[in-house]
Amino acid sequence: MVDTSVDLGFLKLKNPIIAASGTFGYGTEFSSFIDLSHLGGFIVKGLYFSPKQGNPPPRLAETPCGLLNSIGLPGIGVERFSKEVLPQLKGLKTAIIINICGENSQEYAFIAEYLDPYDEISAFELNISCPNVKKGGICPAQNPEDTYKIVKKVKDSCSTPLITKLSPNVTDVTDIALSAQEAGSDAISLVNTFLAMGIDVETRKPTLGNIIGGLSGPAIKPIALRMVYQTAQTVKIPVIGIGGIMTGRDAVEFIIAGAKAVQVGTANFIAPDSTLKIMDEVIAFCKDHNIKRIKDLTGTISLYS
Amino acid sequence: MKILIISKRLIYVKVFIALKNQFWYFKFSIKSSMFINQTALINKKESWDNHYFLLSLESHEIARESKPGQFLMVRITNSPYPLLRRPFSIHAKDKRNIEILFQDSGIGTSLLSKKRQGEKLEILGPLGKGFHIEDKSKKENISLIGGGRGIAPLYFLALELIKKNLNIKVFYGGKSSKDLPVAPKFKKDNITTLCSTEDGSKGFKGLITELFEKELEKNIPSFIYACGPQDMLKKISEISITHHIPAELSLESIMGCGFGACWGCVKKIKRGKQTGWYKICEEGPVFPAKDIVWD
Image 1 (cartoon, chains in turn brown, blue):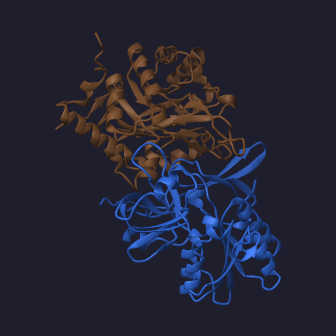
Image 2 (spheres, chains in turn red, yellow):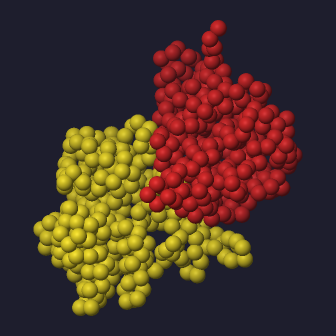
Image 3 (cartoon, rainbow over the protein chains, first blue to last red):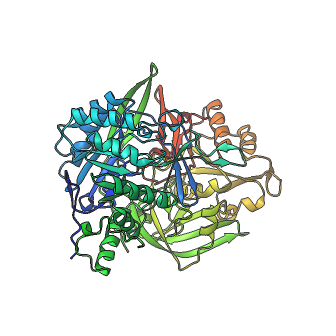
């Protein structure tokens, strides 16, 4: 038997596999395919306070081993979410994490305060890194000062643990990670999508309606892994690795690089049961390598001497 | 074989959004139907000029649940390129099998066209809401208009309409005679089929919408079902409004997941006085022509 549990300090997960925000709807969309209680956790689609329509199509474009998107965070807003969706998630034996978005630090804090009393919520993930909403893809997590300001403001307005989700579209991601840590973030998750674009040479039009979007999928995995490694080397708080994880071996790579848990995103679209398959593959890896506890793998990268 | 069958649950949350002093109507639906995610055997393959292909996939579970206008998400490869599954309309079904008809039109369909009988494919379906046929009466005369690969769902639809003894006429257009691979199947089933080709190599020379307009001078149908390229569907929308013929159109889109999780496949749809982006995979792919807001 492999002990799959991992401990983020503020939150114990039954296993390190978390479904990533924006790829898992509100969770209920997947209850048809998998038993959600078998997940380490899942993160619901980013919520603004008010409902949002999202970006004009085309919102998706495929690239070699990757997916470009400019969905634009459409959603039902916090009030409807808490009344219509949260009651359905109550009782699930898994960590339910709410991804929150805002136009400014007040909006983030307002949402955190609004959802703080709900016991079924295990943590908030602060989406300060989505490239699709602000003009030109500028987002708060590209700047250490603004990152500090938002994290601090949210931390002061709620008691629910905070995970800060970082953008890879920065010069040095560890500067931003340190700011989030200093402001009181309980964990760091990275990376969100890479700013990218495509052009249809026949029509000369951008492949996305929003021109620029975010790249995800296996194409970004090596870059994401490098950033997770660098961040895990720098911060003291737990790091959750994200970026193109499609298989158990991909997940193990991130864990060896220093991640305590990982998020599975784009893979959910390709196979709706990806999260649990990846978990099975991680367990199989541990058995094959005589690893008794998954948590023992974190940060065990063996450098050349 | 792994089969996951879902309990039915339907939740609609109607949200009114105040945006720039105007109201956007926006419907959110969490789950609507029964999806089956399984590995299916390819038990028949047909091809036409190495350009159009038909695969018959063994899945009595999906076959049992499928209705005309619904679709499958098909995983092309286990490798990461091409990454996404591809959506295909259900072309026909019997008790054990479902068929998809497709054109080699890119990396995904090219790879799929090389699959052989006896190989297996991961499929997910039946997805989306199909054509509405329940309310059609024998008094009606119904036109089905398909352009190119858009004929795929209309064959399944035609067979179901015939089962109800309805009076139907099929309009089937393509660039050349090579783009009308399933015309003989309609003929075999004694379905009146009028063909058009842009190069005149078969039937009427011109667009299928031109042929349809010509026929309108003789006879106005009571209902239109159509699937095909965007320009064709846009023209049919115009015709349907001008001549007061209700129509249902099946839309095509790139899709991330096919079951409503990614929000990637939206179309601007008018519901009542409000418009909003609706998911083609979940709310469609079939929409009433009068509701579609064209670019």
